[in-house]
Image (cartoon, rainbow, N blue to C red):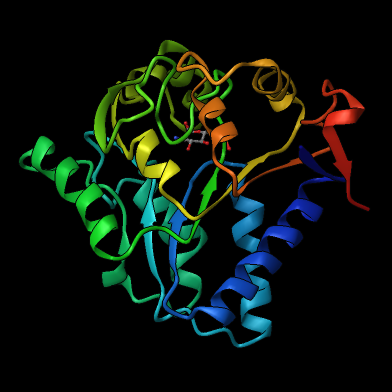
Length: 249
Ligand code: GLP
């Protein structure tokens, strides 16, 4: 079932409220965080609401999904930079507890192992936020990624590089590899919100709806996760049958 809201603002308001409830209930919650343009209004709304309510986020731990290999945290197109700009710098996050995969690790394989292990050691993710790529990727888990994968290095598909190329000055600058947490790491989260907004997500929402649980459609693994909400706006839901949608006014 897809929860369908009017527009990205209504989606953001809903997600922000759910986040605030969780944090008030569990100040030490472990959040799984995502990047991408879908998340921008969500974080903006959350920062606004959190400030208004003087919410203390200093006890939270967060793990980001992914990072481009070759980009440092200071690179404006790195996901680390994105998180600082759109979320971490605006509230009293304890930076030493906001984990983002390192885009320039000395030993990338060791870094991957340690990243998944750290999530487990902290007690597991309470709420995982996800966007979705036009080919159904979540994090940077491209089609064909095994469902039992942990944090690993990926070769980005041409489609993903083209989609994400809009943030770079030229296609040459778009990294070809990334580190991403795996599909099993995502499935281990207690609760998952997959968020999609806009016309350009309508086709992938239909593909996801129609897909069996199949590694060719990475997001389809979430159909096996019993605490996942698919949160979309009307544009992203445009091709879905009404019976699959619960409209929220
Ligand atoms: C990137 C990220 C994904 C994100 C996707 C969609 O590839 N690795 O985590 O979900 O882009 O991004 P957008 O929200 O900009 O459409």
